[in-house]
View 1 (cartoon, rainbow, N blue to C red):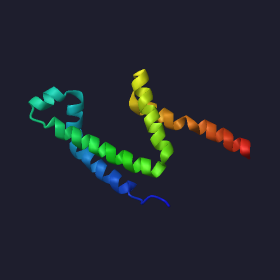
View 2: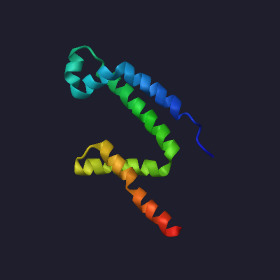
View 3: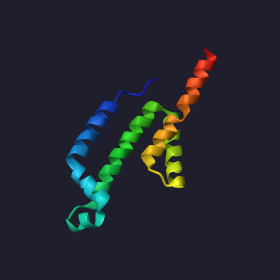
View 4: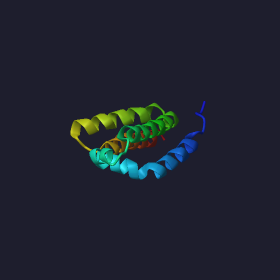
Length: 109
């Protein structure tokens, strides 16, 4: 059966979270020490960011299934191994099977 359609709700909540905290996210990402000195709770800002990211990935993976999870893991490991940006590596890992699937579908028809 299909997963419940909660992706839009999660996306909306995360969009509001990012809009409300984007200055803090940027400050902590680029200079956590200065953010601490300015009185920001860096640990809470990071917790908010990574909790949102986890929720987004949880919903996305539940909707795209095991191949998405596998692509995310492969992309993350490739990023660590070859020291490349994680997002780009995950995108490539998710896109890599598409030409193969296209070739198989054309071969079968």
